[in-house]
Length: 190
Image (cartoon, rainbow, N blue to C red):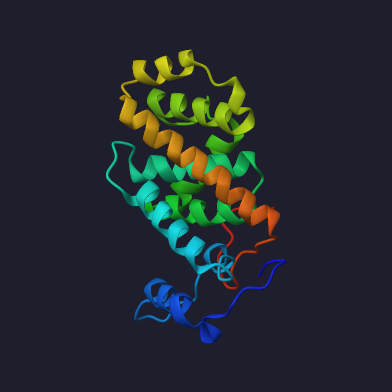
């Protein structure tokens, strides 16, 4: 759960009930804790959901796999167990081979410079690391390196949005004590 109150699906009313219905669909799934934590402020929940969908599923030259890789990398730097597991699972789905995904993920988290990824992805993770650990350390030269790897200004903006979004949601999860949903498989333990 979390350290603050969250409104359960069965007790939701008005706009919150409508948002929950969109999130659970006909399967009547449970709402993820990281979204449910916004239940006390449905307007923020709606905006958060829209931002997430645009950043992670919107049209971009940064592939879904690369976005999931960046998401898990940011979450690992921030030691955010909740998001490491959520997006580690997302990466596994995209790779479609659980063991290969775990190996790639573990290699990236251990030392992305030695991981079996492209030079472009390595440059993306280098930028991700700097922006996450010390934003003021990012310089124009870092963007030149990304451009040298074939990223356009729009690609760099999209990468920046993924990195920034996951720093934001990592702080929501850690700052409010959000726990992994019951029954959710832990990809990587604390």
